[in-house]
Length: 229
Image (tube, rainbow, N blue to C red; front, side):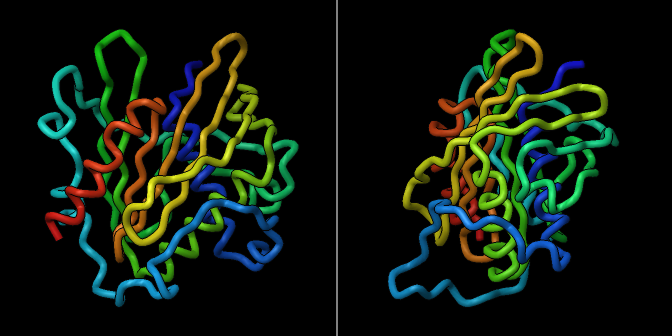
């Protein structure tokens, strides 16, 4: 069984966000995840969330990324049981998620790309829209939970994944920023994935994948969201 990097990230993110809707979210271990807001501590005034169709128009495409990128079809949802071992903050949030699912916000759009066929490098972009308060609160809890444990294990079906998490500093763009780097190992296969989330008013931009590709295209993703509002 091959575990795609973006699928592992989505699984853990859904696990955290789903659990945050219950009283158990109050027990999340506090961490020092990097979060920035506009000067004065004020966020932009809330506005009506964008529809999924409107978000889809703001996704990066091959012309934005440049030569060598191929858009990959969206994978059908899988429903493997997921169990977290060795990370109390995640364990307390629940154990079952849909691998490769999306965050639990009402409006969403996603695109995934492979760079240089055969290289194994992937990058994906996810856009979500909700009220600014819900986006900020939900994503903060996800990153707090995921970065609270430097190492832990995830069982996806019968496959054991060794996880390592390192908090990163996100670039100062948008209204709020979060970033982390995850290392996961399945047998002898080892991959490093970076995930950076930027909130721009009532839109959340998440770029995940190979660290170099995330760094190269994050600003483009944020800029396209801002230009087409």
